[in-house]
Image (cartoon, rainbow, N blue to C red):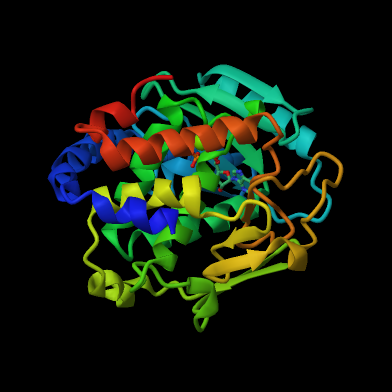
Length: 335
Ligand code: GTP
Ligand code: MG
């Protein structure tokens, strides 16, 4: 009821579409930056082809999912089809070749949770992390990118939410707040829930794409060119959606009992996932189901302190969207 009342009383919201669109446009990377990324990938492809002719490099994360900010580092996955890959060995060998090829700041982090090689390309100035066989990340990157091609409002909303999260310091997983990946999933879910919906649920449709990754079958409808008018029955604009998104996470979401699920395009109960109590370090205080690794809660990093920080920030954002004369400026004020 509270939600409805909040949503109903601002009638000047459309005046704020233009400023939000302007923020969005200022955040998308320029074409020449994407060119530089391609240039670096080509160089790395060559190097890898010499050492491992059967391996392949994939971009993943924000540089490939269409939700990347300018000047972000790029994430690369080296896929090697070999039953007994010794990741440390490969990473050390890769680091050697990179150094002889004049890459800078080359560092093999073989004992990290996700072992990687770090490098900086002196020609383009781009920094890059290379991991091995993290194929799920490559597949969920494709899922996000496919969703972004269905309706342009997803990209607008997700850039604005990411920019807000970075400005307000609630995009820091090591401090118990959420990853960019989690925020994008929250945006997709929100747009699936609009009525009429702005996004479909690709994993509930007849699959046109299917890969098996470590015992998980990842399948969904990826022929998104066919869905370019899917959201056209819904006329909501960006300012309304930003408002509705924050309103949902401030006042509408049932944190105690529910899980948001892009996989099913719906809200699930914590009970059915057995996410009702703390297990180890996973407290499940805000639950966001990974679309493929369904036992994985992207809210697992959130603890009893950071959940308060997050919810206060959602409420702050919702209030600004509800009543501030210039919400677009206020929303992104640095924390
Ligand atoms: P920014 O670097 O903040 O712009 O965003 P990003 O899209 O690169 O996001 P992030 O650094 O959070 O994650 C990079 C990629 O790793 C994501 O796009 C996912 O593909 C993958 N990833 C991140 N976190 C998880 C996770 O908890 N589980 C899984 N399966 N994949 C993840
Ligand atoms: Mg990243």
